Length: 207
Image (cartoon, rainbow, N blue to C red; front, side):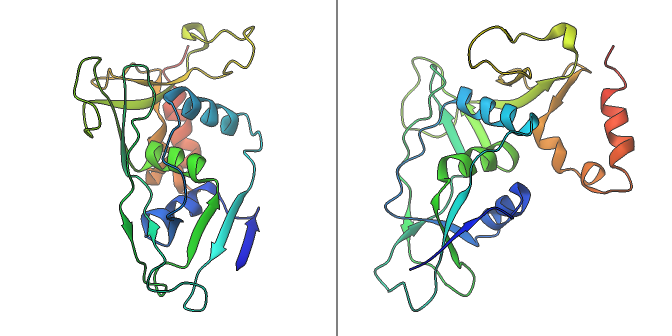
């Protein structure tokens, strides 16, 4: 089995590969179990430029998979219960076309799923007495508060977040000092010629 521990690929490149169907998971991977808090802390680590460990990939081709080798796609939406824990969802198993899909993720599934859901997918929260195991509910967004005077994090608490980044059900009109994480994918932030101006615009309303 050809295994690659890749330290060079960017987060964005990995997520693009998931979106394009290039990356899948082996059928033996466990279900998605992360909570909202774990996703928030993952993003906090990224913003602090902390290492988030490596990803372990398995290159798949006609020589190492057969007709009865099954894989599953990454989740594109997830529902969290009222305790903000992810509902266990059974992945749909399928075969793959190795001409299009050539990589299976052996380690890093929970982290990559969390990042993919944050930027490309949809997240919901199910109210306390709603029916379980049904995808859907109240849409939530992942936001960061840019105004340090509005921060709700306790920096003295052990293992606390340093940035005020959290999921919210209040997805209507955002405060001028709130920034939705998935906005970093917009062209103005990705383009070198407009990024600086976009950042200045985003923070212009912050006291």
